[in-house]
Amino acid sequence: MSRPPKPFLQELDEAADPSSAPPVPDVAPEGQAMQAVARLSQGRGSPALRFALWAFGALFTFVLSVAAWDFVTGLLARNRVLGWTALLLVTLALLAALVLAAKEWAAFLRLKRLDHLRSQAEAAGAAADVKAARRVLSALGALYAARPDTAWGRARLAERAPDLMDADALLALAERELLATLDAEARLVIEAAARQVATVTALVPLALADVAMALFANLRMIRRIAEIYGGRSGSLGSLRLLRRVFASLLAAGALALTDDMIGSVAGGGALSKLSRRFGEGVVNGALTARVGVAAMELCRPLPFAALDRPAVSSLVRRALTGLVPGREAAPR
Image 1: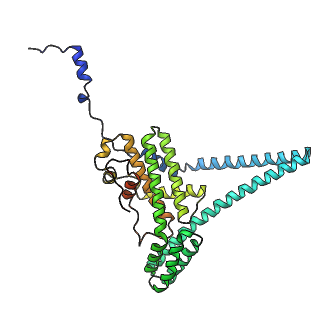
Image 2 (image 1 turned 90 degrees about the vertical axis):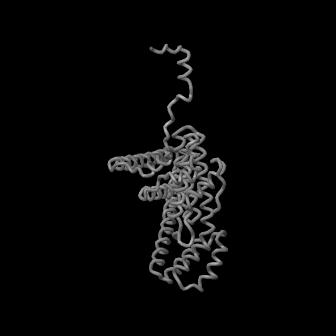
């Protein structure tokens, strides 16, 4: 015997029942903003595109130079006072451009100096060369001679270094006395950047704003880390350093978070119970911390040996204290 049809209103009530709805797909957050920043930093374009950009840039510079020349010579022919004024302004503009170019070149040289020091330290440690290690210590002292925050460490280094006759011991002493304070300052910068990126991602529902904020925060973080270790990179230097950082992370396959790390950051299954935007914020903050640690390794004049490399999970826990329920600040 067939069952009688259900009333139409009863069918509507059953359809509107939340318990009858299909489960929401469990899609783990991937940090889309940081992935986009990585693609932007590594995008070089095709050779034809780079040649076209160079050609248009050269053409624009040539046209601008000819226009400025015609402008100045025309004013000189019409009115000598206005002509000399225009010539003075053009000269000042050229001098300003040269000063900016010199500053950028000096920034590249400072970053190269840090790379050279790190290479020397690695070679001295590998060869157990005491004289090379002492040369590295002398170069470090010259690098931080004008830094008041390293005065105590430099004094301790000068006091204790003559008693050591081992290359590894000399480099370890320099790392502990000179770089421990700088490492702590760099960790604070990384935590602040990770917190900023995570907060903006969680609260601003605009994908383009996420990418722009992540790019700006990471550039500022990398530039500040370079300044802490003595690099003081300029605008172009910061972009080049950003490219190097993401290139090293991509080459190592490190621009991704494992499930274990996500669980340690967000308290196991707590992340899956929160909104997807909040989960994206946590992952973007964690990836920012990973970029910061990689920047520390590239900007540090000595490799991590005597001191431990900062743990990304610890940095993120401290940065997101109060944002993730049930999380307290972990000790350094």
